[in-house]
Image 1 (cartoon, rainbow, N blue to C red):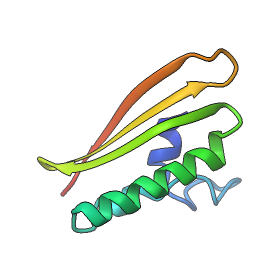
Image 2 (tube, rainbow, N blue to C red):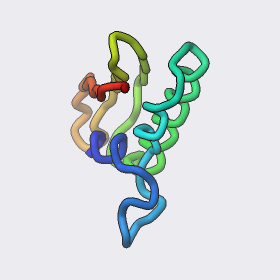
Image 3 (cartoon, rainbow, N blue to C red):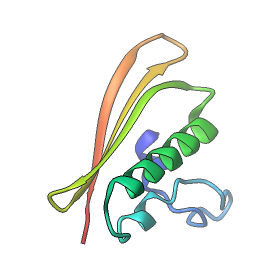
Amino acid sequence: MIEQVLFTQPGERVNLPEFGSGLLGLVFAPGGDTLAAATQQIVQAALQQWLGDLILLSDVEVEFGDGLLRVSVGWVERATGTARQDQFQVGVP
């Protein structure tokens, strides 16, 4: 579900046009520390909005480098208390 939120563009889903994070739109922006910090905030906000009742975020890290955008998400499943750390990446043109 986290991957769906991260890689769905707002407007992509007909019945839920606000769903998504807009992360893929940032892939084309010039990288840097400022963009990484802004991307981190966008990812946190989207995950809290769409999955906040299911997961508790512990950390979000965003890195640009080697032609990749990497997003690392630490979270805890609210129902079971199980902690996880997942990493997602997409190529940067």
